[in-house]
Image (cartoon, rainbow, N blue to C red; front, side, top):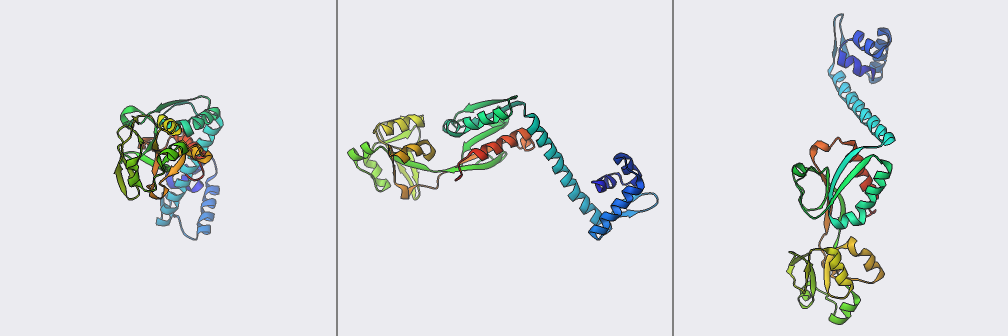
Length: 282
């Protein structure tokens, strides 16, 4: 990066002093660089040094490389020494339970001086006001004043226990749900499908997806939940997937954080750890 020092000092003498090399050696290295690039980078006079247009272009590129190397050195130092301080995260309960707790545990094993504060809820926190570093949210419209990185796509599925279907029949089209007991999350009285929405009704509304799953396993009715909540039960046959041809495009979990944390090495490392831990079909 000898050229950067000359370009910033606009003096061979000052640059040579900073680099602790001779002026003659520095001048020769710059001449070699110009020969390799096939263009003059500097306009030399007895009193000053100025950049040519090509020299300014080379300087900008080299300065960017130098900045990247500085960032790399910083990240390597963090990797060797570990992170400290606190990381404040908010995430939906089910996502935290299924994926995030394991990521947090593994990350803290690598960085034992780091403390993680995890808020599990479905509350849409104001990240600026509530001082969260990172939010995981299932949303189609992330806040415009935040950095939002799509992380994982998942389907929402209708399902029921074989015992329920044997007793009440299996709906083949969504309009047949009117003849079934649809157990729903509080406030979600309309279910969306590929070709529209439908009002549903049932014997119970609960504000906890895990309890809805439990009711479905007990044969109490049909539920519509995130696929990752019931994938194991669908695989072993304890629940049956319904209306697959009418499912919508699903949802996307985003990682959302304030713009001023873009350069946080601690946050970037945690985000990489989350990405590495997600299923391959994410």
